[in-house]
Length: 222
Image 1 (cartoon, rainbow, N blue to C red):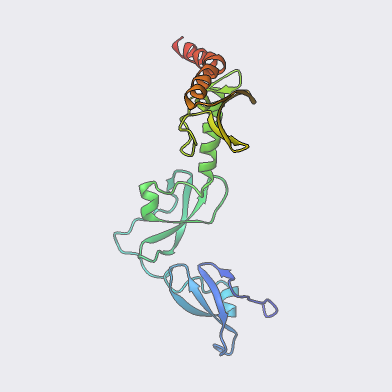
Image 2 (spheres, rainbow, N blue to C red; image 1 turned 180 degrees about the horizontal axis):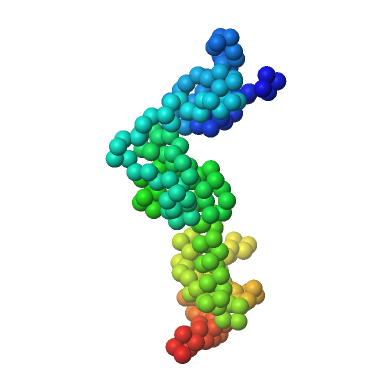
């Protein structure tokens, strides 16, 4: 242990080392540390490396008699392992293991019980993947995702109409309509008037998008 070095910003349980103290404690190298609960404390090198000091003391504080013990309880993808100190506001902090294998997820009892924390964050990725799979499998026709065809115009549209764009070439303004289906883009234009470009876009929708939309509607009615 004598040959092992400790560096600033090194974690030991709930303690993170800040700086080495100029003076020794018990004739031993000592460090100023910050606890996860927000409090500051000092610890000797042997206390940190030997795991004899894990916090500022908040881990040793007795919980109130009416405090809930969440050990081994499951909240979403999280299984509570053990008490892990307190938050800055004094709420119980718990270390949890996520379904994905991450066993160092810390959350307050309040957020766990409210369902505001249900994983280490990996569940969100799976939800996105599930939504994408649903979009491709249940809301698609011949590989074309129907919700993408019917989504609203983007807020940054220069014309306020989906698939209709204002162009400028050689100081001359004109409008263009286009539509994409199965990775291929179809164009119409140029047009001097916006109304003509809008009408062209509607014709493109009827020709290229409407058949897919109608097929999905018919399948859902069966």
